[in-house]
Length: 265
Image 1 (spheres, rainbow, N blue to C red):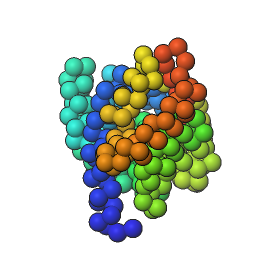
Image 2 (tube, rainbow, N blue to C red):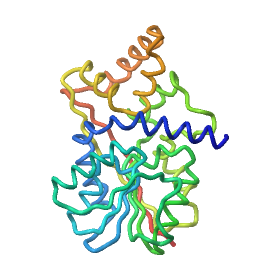
Image 3 (cartoon, rainbow, N blue to C red):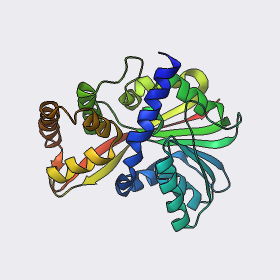
Image 4 (cartoon, one colour):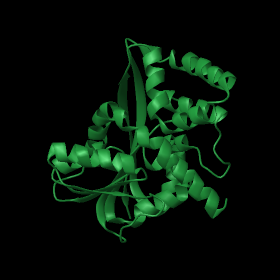
């Protein structure tokens, strides 16, 4: 892996995830689940990593936490600031990379990430940075997609048609408790897991497909790559429908996710 390859990969991530904003209607309730699970309190200094449209950051700020938040996508940071203005809360948003956090060691009481840090290509770098900026005895907590459930299987399907470079870690590894234990190692204590649920509503499979194809980063990238290959795109869509219809009931997908929490030693 070269520096140029890493830069290109992250630039592609920045572009493909920039369309994610409409999905905030579904990530808002899980944001409250993560903030509550973390035990965040008024007056604490809190960082939201991979903040997207700011749903976690704003939820924590409404509790009275002093919140900073960053995301790779400037488009999502702009939307997050709009949301904070509407909510009338102060959050220090900035564009940034979880693999190189622009904060001093031990800056925060709480570090959170909802479906964010898991997309960093090098998990060992991301978690090292998240723990670096966390105070001793501080709380780290995050929500991730398990590989064996629907969203994890969706990302595996996308990777089949649009494989990432071999040096990029699959994001759904972060949905495996054993992988999380390995990454956190002996740097934390009292590692705890719980499960949350996100409901993704759609009037039909066609509505769902249109939504994910226009908002979910890896799917957006796949469509761009396959725009001149209709056979490949059609085959992907057939497999997506076959997978999704196993989970689509009563106009929604019930998508379970993993929440993890630990305290820095």
